[in-house]
Image 1 (cartoon, rainbow, N blue to C red):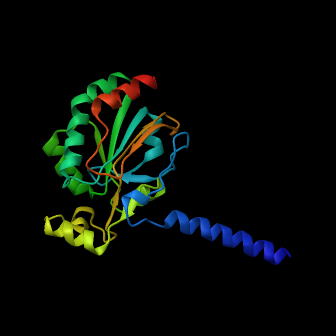
Image 2: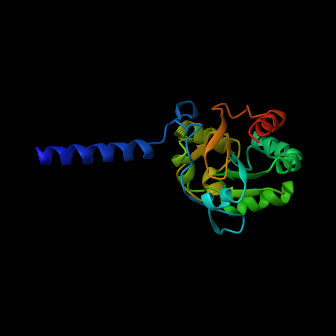
Image 3: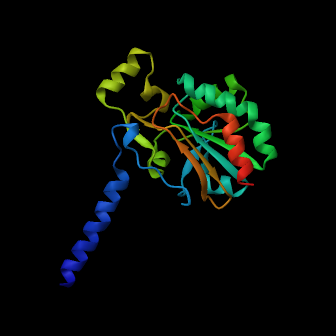
Length: 205
């Protein structure tokens, strides 16, 4: 009986681990972390390639955590520019902006220089943190070919061969990492409007 209990315990643990490691094949099938939960610990890289602990970053200040696909995505660039326009308002409300993508640090640096962003861009090139938050999805062969036809080489953007992307997402966090608001849309063409984000931040003061 004891051996059976140990087996079931190990089986349950392995099943739970497998579920966390499973990446869906479509953005519509993601299972993201929920409002009220605390974001997990994890390391990301800045534009200089330095490792930064996400928990340590958000301890400093309430945070708007933004996941975008990469600097090759026109919808992402529109979103980043929109954040730049309201960044002072966000800061005045007591929040910082951290924007995370699957781009490797070198690509982040290009984005930062081109956009002259005042907020911090971070790299999750291996997509480890996006998977922890349940917002990563896998591109199938057909999608990969379609992206390449448009000149988008995801392996060069991230420096990795996983061919995964994050569903665009916005999380509003307190300094303990608790999610107070989230907006996650599998349709990458639809992003949270800047004025709505500001209204959310005012409501969470």
